[in-house]
Length: 123
Image (cartoon, rainbow, N blue to C red; front, side, top):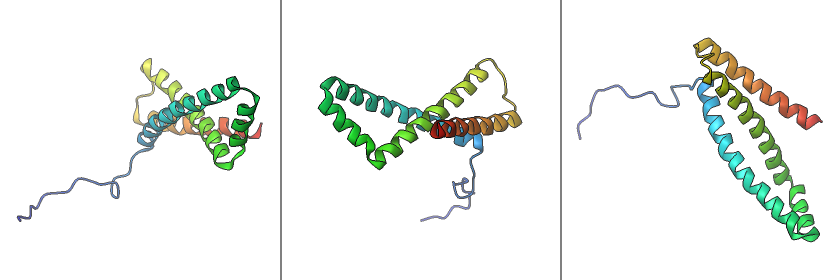
């Protein structure tokens, strides 16, 4: 087997994604999670329509700690996806494409999403 002396491509151990890349990937992931949350909402509506016994069983499932964690995760995903969606609307009018602005607004949108989440959690 021949050994080739050619450079290797940077790998994740060497290359570090910029915050804008991480925010973009997270936006896609939260979109998928929110699609799954819609399925959860449909199950909730079916439980309500099925009557009081089914709805009380559904509420008991919601009281389970992993369910509560998923619930709060869905809320954060909603806020994050909303903030990044607003950023996309700003991009649609052709603003904030400079590298410094991209990074600054990525940090701002993440901060606003966390702030909205904390306000919801406290409230």
